[in-house]
Image (tube, rainbow, N blue to C red; front, side, top):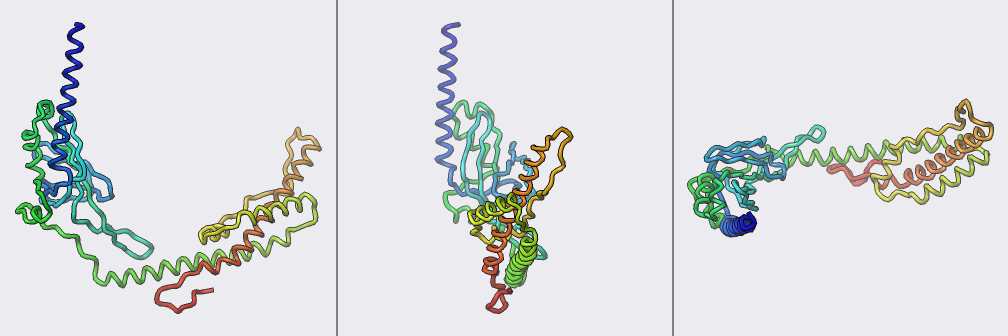
Length: 304
């Protein structure tokens, strides 16, 4: 038994070495190669590699988009396993993917990728048999040394990316104008809201020492938190101040001293919030007009 264990370890090490050699041989021949698919495939075309399980000439894929045999692709990477080889491919020709933005249907080019998972007999990998391995791959994946050779193949299906809709340039112009108008409407709404809010704050300012102490601290905090981006300035107008009550409902066992301390804290918090909101609001109202954008096709001056 003691002599048998080292023999097992040696056999496993030799098997791993052979698998490593075969991996390098396969990569040398297939990595970066131009290929033409010999079976139907599927991909979501969302940037990742969709698995396509291959057993003989039977393929099982779960991608949303179906592609006929003869698709031109490039081999990105290879992973050899005990009874399978994975070949990750990117199709050369993209597809048009649509998405909705408001009333507009827009299109972007999307790359489609698949992971060809070809089942292999274990003996193929075990015996470092490159020729046998390729006999399982070539029926579903035709390898070529160069792109022009792959395109000249009789198996190439010649698929081209679908054309954009007629007058799509005009659609893009209208979309750009609509997006600019959306930005300007958002900026204008933020200005109106901040003007209304900040105009109400002076009516709440009072001479209570606790309130004024908090108010001063809020002004200092507002100056320190000065926004630098238009998105931050707009967010100031959209964020409601947290509710703070001047008086708190005391618990049944609260002592008069604790109750008074809680009410003082509430007044200080209210002053802090008013001081910060007033400082941030006035600064945002002053600088938000600079966030208006030019609407394509309109005059040089954005709305005010």
